[in-house]
Image (tube, rainbow, N blue to C red; front, side, top):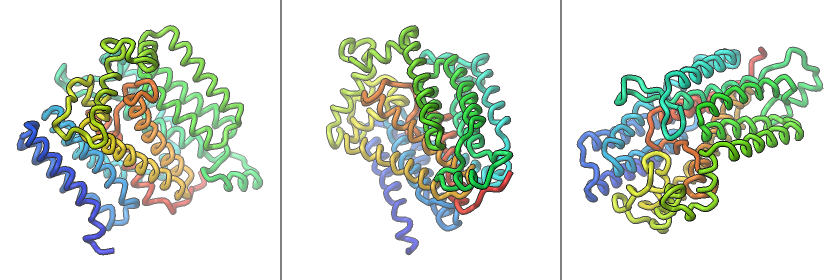
Length: 428
């Protein structure tokens, strides 16, 4: 394959950024020289990173391409909504690229000891939860932000980083080698596509870690992240072969907690009522979802054009409802393209997991791909009224530095694993 042909996907990223910036300027949007420089910088960085990954043998070359496309769409939409948001988003994208390769190098350097660091993952997570409860700030009903430096200082959402520790913890638990294992058991385990069959100790350990995380998240009223954590845990125990009874027990516990929350917590009641019938109180409880549906419908198939929509009528359009703004201005076809990018990104993550021969790497790749795929589904399903709305971000597109940097780090780990897919598991 020639160099020009291998670089062809980058032409579309450059074209998207150039056309997007031009349309925003023509419509009277962002004309900041800084924004134009940052947009150009993203194109240059995308070319450099893709070239490095492709020709230096760092594994799957398509991960960063898809991320660059999603990040470009996010940067364009943030510039269209507000220039200041777009400039910050583009800066976070460039910083996230550094986090991507830093996480990749750290994982490659520490891959031998990472399966042994379960107490560290749990300890750091608990410390971050405790710091959030003590020093955190409440926003939209959830106590999930730590602000450093006053009202205009740096805002950090610790739960975004804890997501990576959670996946590493579950991966270490489910792939830990038992002290005693018969030859028959080893052979049975080796026939499984994802490694070892979970025994009671593994299941109880994973359940205990999940319960601790969910407990802290419920104290913070972080229902969206709590749902994401539980779904990740549930698929872990399903894939790793937990008994049907144990799966049903966890499902029943989740339904019970949901029912109690729906009965006694007004915040949950409001969201469910808005989901079931948003038009019953379109100016109150259902305002967010009705405006989202109006925007998606107004865009039609091809959209109203970048800069031509009425996105300011959508609450939290720069974060929770950015997908609605994309559909209004780029159409349902544009929204479908975004969904397909997330689908392909998740598919490639699962493909990396299945190609691994190292059990821990396989579990980490599976967990990170699953969690980020579920996150995309939950937020897109919420703004389209498929499921009740939860306040989580759309990866690489929604406004937010913590989410951007940690998601880049998660995919940096996936990039490292894709380069190590032929490495076998060491006996611990």
